[in-house]
Image (cartoon, rainbow, N blue to C red):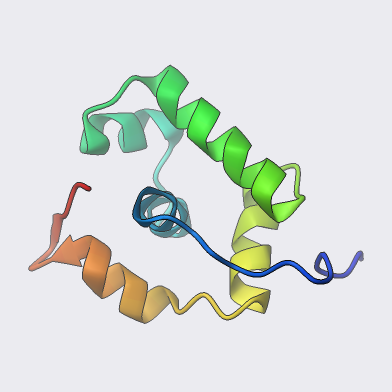
Length: 89
């Protein structure tokens, strides 16, 4: 198993934080598009940019990167969801 990319500072935008949380919650690209009211192509582009930013090539890699670099899923999830409703940035 490869280790996390070295010397990369986690600096996700609010939209990227939303994407990471939604991926963590098990949302499909289609479900993310519907929740965020954007095209599925936009979701794919934004997630591909996350792959570049995290030097990974799949969703699991992005989530692993976030976890290993201190992404606090509980706190961010509370910011992304307010009373169970998605907060759209």
